[in-house]
Image 1 (cartoon, rainbow, N blue to C red):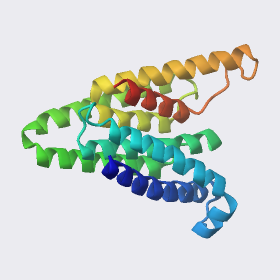
Image 2 (cartoon, rainbow, N blue to C red):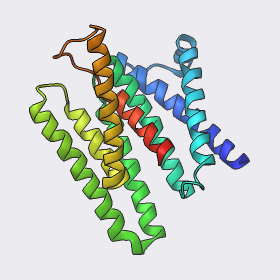
Image 3 (cartoon, rainbow, N blue to C red):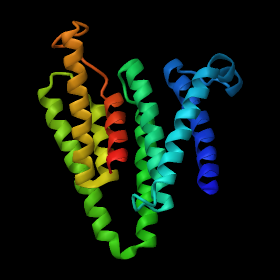
Length: 219
């Protein structure tokens, strides 16, 4: 338990520093110093750190019950942390940064390489599961993109393709169901309250984060 807490503290501290800096860098198109960030956004930094720490500790402490190795648990933590930042930025400007998607993609490729090295007999299973999940995730959202008239964007397509690469087909479908159901439910509430119109658009990443969280909880 002590080791899990120490790892969680390190990941959360580094993750918070990276997330807060990248958020300001992306939104302001500038390179702020950490001193400036801490001065102007100390509460945001604190809240982000607490959220990251809570999620990290929960994933690490529950990894044995879920049958996860330590590298797999750390991968899940970093994926959630990255998705949290994606959700924050998408909720703010309705755009998913390609640099964050590239980071999540490279992270998954690295973790796949580690899994293949430690279990070479599972090479075919790992590759097929991941690639099928990626193709299905991207394909479903591509179909929605073609017929949605702007309510689904290219960033959503890339994000679901990456989630498919992480979870394979079964995990992708579960995460997608949680995401789309929660988005539809929220849209209905906004329509009933007359806070949105039928043609209004919503950022998808916050609902992806919610879907990912439910997937981790119910896994």
